[in-house]
Image (cartoon, rainbow, N blue to C red; front, top):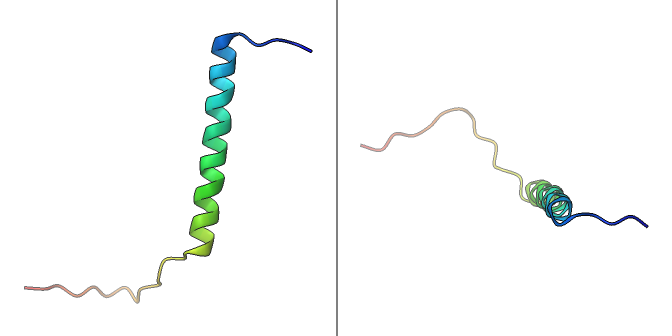
Length: 45
């Protein structure tokens, strides 16, 4: 086994957290699609 320094552990933890949060966002967006608009927006006076 090899040992990581505190700085290496922090970087590895950050990378893993970013990957997990990206995966969670992807899963959320897949299950909650945005409604498709027809390109016309209504302007309210």
